[in-house]
Length: 159
Image (cartoon, rainbow, N blue to C red; front, side, top):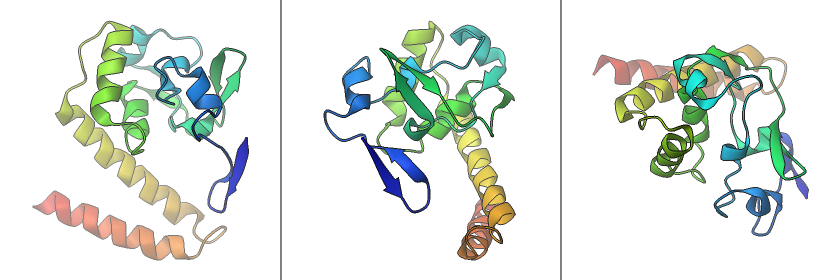
């Protein structure tokens, strides 16, 4: 089932018993372990490889017994922790559970909290940049919100 969201368009419905809950490996409704960027294994992604750039449930589509990424405009080369930083900004995906699950699935050490904190700050800056870039064509209020968030981010960096 798909619902419509004013800011994001069509969004997969992740209600109990929905497609994500049915397809997640651990029954939590978290599809991310099923999604892998094309052409890379888990260990390669940690060193740097192709990352989706906007890893979240609405950018994955259930296909058969698996899931595939869609919406690649933010794909880039980078550490897989970049995608985990995006995913863990969603309150449905607790940081500890995501990082522990990824470490177990990839056979690597858990990504340190300090690394994640830097990536979250960079993701926030990326979001602000996008908001400023599209404010005129989509939502004029993005400009004011982005400017306010940028001022907060810069003030936090000074402390």
